[in-house]
Length: 195
Image 1 (tube, rainbow, N blue to C red):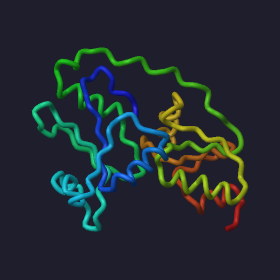
Image 2: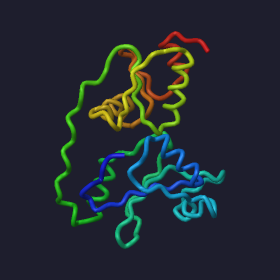
Image 3: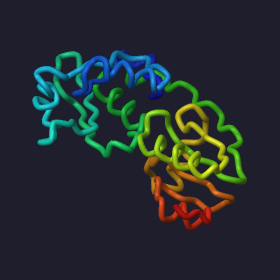
Image 4: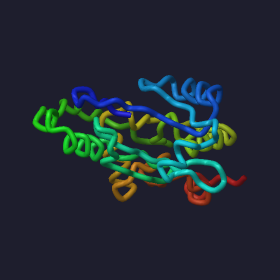
């Protein structure tokens, strides 16, 4: 997640999982910089109040921006594998709070040269399909270069260009052939792999 420093904003994560599960998940992500809350008991009570608890007991992946008076001002419910646009969140936060509306945006880091040649996987640490792709590549002894789109300046824009404006992960650049998502039939075809 990008920084929202200077926007007088508190980011909170909430999940219907238990505290031990969330602790393990946060460690798996390499640590997070915002509080992560458990909506475990009564199971999903908060998610239910916000209208994002599914019948099977899991919650939708959703973002809410709430103003200082406790009024929900922005809602984004999206696919679990998609990373929402931080630019859109900044815009929503700026619209809500006039005190930060006119503050300048922080400078974006200059894009770095992105790797080419062989298998290059554009991914995030948290993406379940990225984890499956790593395991699949390892199973077939396929060496690859990994690009974390959150940590690599310019990588998000590259993925969005390949994925029709979406931050779909993983994305693969295989010697110039682009495969969007963990599309096993297409990966097998491009890499000449049989399971």
